Length: 282
Ligand SMILES: *[C@@H]1O[C@H](CO)[C@@H](O)[C@H](O)[C@H]1NC(C)=O
Ligand SMILES: *[C@@H]1O[C@H](CO)[C@@H](O)[C@H](O)[C@H]1NC(C)=O
Ligand SMILES: *[C@@H]1O[C@H](CO)[C@@H](O)[C@H](O)[C@H]1NC(C)=O
Image (tube, rainbow, N blue to C red; front, top):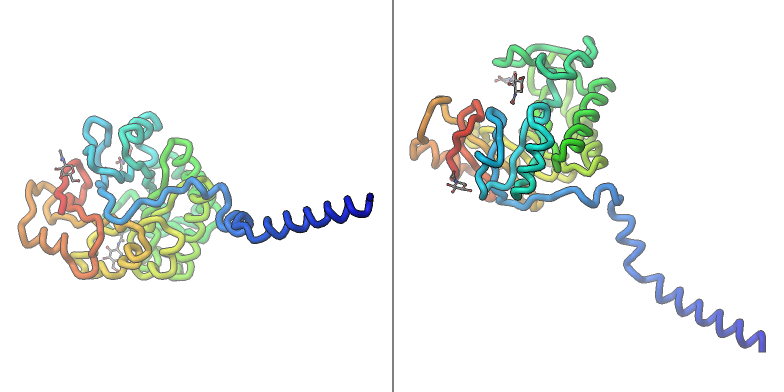
């Protein structure tokens, strides 16, 4: 009797196990850590504006504009919360490749990691993003973005290697830094977007949820960012007027901005370079 019972139990277990084994559970659980589950992925063609030169509020936001990067330090958690409640996707902008004299954490950058002044931006100097303290400061900014309620980050000025930064930065260093920023953001539950940096798109498109590009139509390099669209990720594209007081855009400028080679699927807008509250949509 005992022998028969244990044989039946054994068979039962065996059947249960063979049934459980091919179940998809184990393969999905290794795909992504739960900390990344909440990272957003905006779709190709998402509408946007780049309100870095004025204070965006629910009163002046456009109801049909979804994606808005806002200045991390200058935008309050209350404002970010209200904009999100109104249906907008709010991400936090900060400079990841330079130190701006007027930022609260400016004094934390080690002198040895501060390089040359950016052309046209006297309050801003390139930093050596290989430096561990610089990366710590950026991790703190990403945490602050999360604390304030942003759902992603827009770290600017990562392409110092193409400029006279004062450091011997290479393209490989920049790819490594992008991976660091993306991993840090994702671990905090935030999405990460690549800013400019067309030369490294193929190497980092997999770790970014979108790209933001300035002036690719003017410089005829929009095709560099097309791999994002191909991967199902939006390219937020802004062209600038020559005149910051312009109240209209010529038909030829608009045609150039909105239909340059390689920009099919881009979310394109035209703005003053001051990024004030003036915009022309394609
Ligand atoms: C943020 O605030 C600082 C200090 O008031 C100001 O200098 C800077 O222009 C502001 N930047 C943005 C993007 O609002
Ligand atoms: C809001 O944005 C849409 C494009 O997304 C545009 O057509 C519309 O004119 C904008 N509304 C205002 C009030 O600017
Ligand atoms: C970066 O270098 C280019 C030339 O390669 C120059 O036109 C541009 O002004 C520089 N940008 C900054 C922010 O220094």
